[in-house]
Amino acid sequence: MLKPVPPAVCDQYGQPLFGRYAGAPDQIAYDRLDAEYRRSWWWERTHRKHWHYVALASDELFCAMAIVDVGWTNTAFAYVFDRAAKRLIASYSRDGIPGLTARLSDHPAAGAFADFKFGRESMRYEQDEYGFKLRLIFPDWELEAGGESLHVVPGMTAIARPQGGTVHTTYKSSAMPCEAGVRVGERFWKLNMIASTDHSLGFLARETAWQWASAHSLSLGWNLQSGYLGEQENVLWLDGNLIPLGAVRFQFQAEQPEQAWLITSEDGLIDLVFQPEGVRAEDKNLIIAASRYQQPIGVFNGRVRAAKDKPWREVKNLVGVTENHFSRW
Image 1 (tube, one colour):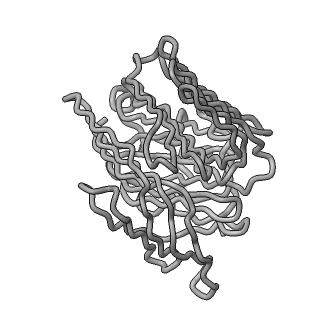
Image 2 (cartoon, rainbow, N blue to C red):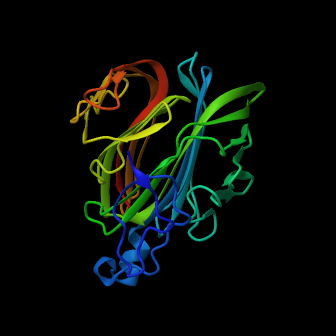
């Protein structure tokens, strides 16, 4: 089991409190960071990466959004995936104006907000100690969701020294039940959905790459990553318990991400097959920056367990995502 998260990510001497914890810190702040982890003003400005991601899952739709501040500019995306039709039915992607279009708080849970505005397009997530609200407004589609966060299983915080960076903190929520209304053109859905969030802030390498997998129900879920943070953020939520996992291996075809993915953990607690239903992808090359992003949406099958001496729990058609991501930012 994981220890409770400290209220701050650094101690009184500015040393990062590296480790995996249960719960969210009050704030992710590096203003008192020890000199060992400091760099020049320009390096910190251009290597500071901050994002807030939200996913909403149901039998009918999978929706996601992210607002990202990369230090010298910002960007945002959102989409709606129709699971029956197996295709995106709404999608949004916009590079913002530095210092103007995106705002993110350094509170990962209670007190969190992430806001992106560009003309008539707007995205906003906010959360307090009782619950959260999400609203996306675009000319041809909208989404509004909200739910309680009082009685959910604790999320996970990882504080780590990333490859090529200095310090990075990520908070991954557990499943948060919510109600959502989605309008795409003249179609409208009112759904009970499962929400999850990813709030991350730290100083990363100029080039960063990872594979990631996430899925949630009220009794079962996981966050799995291979890449810049190693095994630090790998956890399993099982029947109200938060279980740390070892390193994870992703086997997939990068040129054919719609094919099956095999995901296993070195500690023998995860054995999953992910079958994509569709893929959201972007490939941007702006000379000074680049992003290659594939996020298949689909279902997981297989088995998980809390320890090697515990029984397996079968996983059947649990909706979620995987991701293969490279950024030069």
